[in-house]
Image (tube, rainbow, N blue to C red; front, side, top):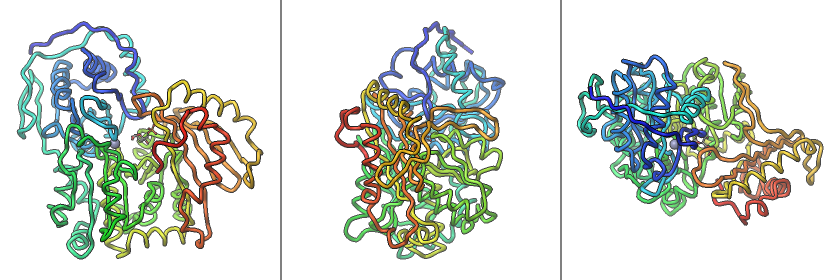
Length: 543
Ligand code: G6P
Ligand code: ZN
């Protein structure tokens, strides 16, 4: 095997964020940039020689090129076998599934999730461990530490691998196995859900529309909804992964999935709509003229889980990220099971799932999943909803309203201020910190502050502590405002403001969330001086 040892110099900016290393494509195109990060990853791992690695991505620009480089580096570093998705395609949940089923030591996912792609867009690299989940902080910190001192990397000089033909080939001693991107994942879905019942639903009068946003779920959605579950051709829209996602922003929310929103809120709207993001781990659920907030979606799935074959035995617990609404907590309380509150980032659910403390997890950022894998899973959430609707024979809106009648409604909204200058964002957070000790007991109109802090999490399984995970202001009536800076952006800073208010009275469950939350929004402005400090009159995205 012709291994070359290449001399390199460290880059100072290879710190993985909430979800791996995300940068502009142009950053990854710098000589040695990708190679340094991949070598730093291998250098931080142990005992992987001769073992299996899973590799794939969301098909965005630079995916194929990065895969060729990583394959040659894996061979040079002694990996035994790489399972790579056909055409370089593997959704994030499918990667997690394949890692677990093949007993791989880990996987590398090439994606910047919901961030735009193309030569001027973003790219990303994320390492997942053998449980199929994102590497915990101690691993990502080790990778970062290594990246700051790295002085060489190893690569095999070999021709490129044909990624489009299924089957095995070799780079030196390492086997490269090009696998069907969909098969293992589709089988796992079939083992969890009542496909016969969903088939009946989708071949009757019920109409659904799935928007894959020109991103990775297209092949999965075609295979599962149209080919296996009988939904008519055309149910899946924008179903061919494109390197630039058709110029769009593959983030399934009310702003970026506007084509789908128009269909579901238009004339002759279908019964059900769903969208997923760049790498297939996020989901948005819509009913006819009805939007389900991700926090409510988590609560509804948990409340109805025993209707679904894979969850018939009930849930061990629920976990949600801190900024996610407390709707799930109410379901957990009724079921008599624990509800865990973790920092933002799917990696924090891994230990709870491994220890069987939680079965279902969710985040306000359009992520839901369960212990079937260790990533969030967009199509899983869609199938879960369809299974529940098929059993209950209700519309999305009826199901949601029944839920609120039983549990009360947690009005919820998130305001994003994107592309804020980093200095300004840091000043805003510093000002909030300065106020934290004095806020308790302070009154804003009828509301009184019960607590204010910067969220700190102690992992109940391994005792690790994660500090400064978001400023929380909680009021005595149970309402909350949370401020945090996004950990996934690549330019400037993104301020997120999360607003939540509980309403028990069913006669008040039909308000527009923006109306219901108007007071809280004003308080957030008063405390954080958002307009002045960001220089922005209004948020870029409201969900
Ligand atoms: C990624 C992670 C999620 C996280 C989300 C938002 O999608 O996988 O777990 O909730 O990013 O992160 P951000 O730091 O941008 O709010
Ligand atoms: Zn994603």
